[in-house]
Image 1 (spheres, rainbow, N blue to C red):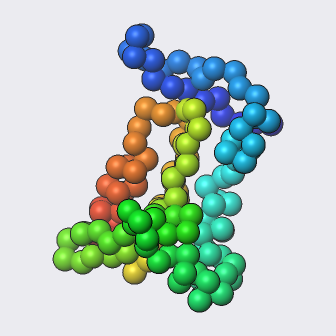
Image 2: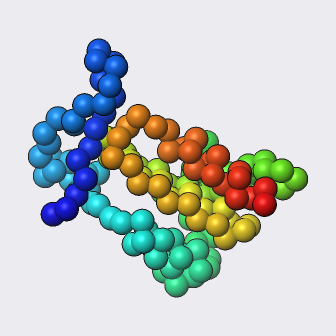
Length: 136
């Protein structure tokens, strides 16, 4: 299928190792999806420009609730330089595979990161990228 192998950090060996074999049917929707950065960008563009949901429905989805969690996404204000843009993000991970869709509403900036290891925090990585982009 052309999918990347995934890796996890083994503390005992102090290095990355191949993930254990899995049966995707055991994960149901949690591990049953895969995508490309380009496809996720198309999805993000459709979502945030009103082509996927009505504006009113999107506004409900993006209303932060408990612990900055909206309907299926995290929504929060962040401090960057002299502004406080609204960030909408949806991370996902299973074993060594990780994905991050990170969207800055006010500037219409989307960051998509796909990783085949659990050895990096995509939350921190996306936040650092957005900070650098928004300072320009």
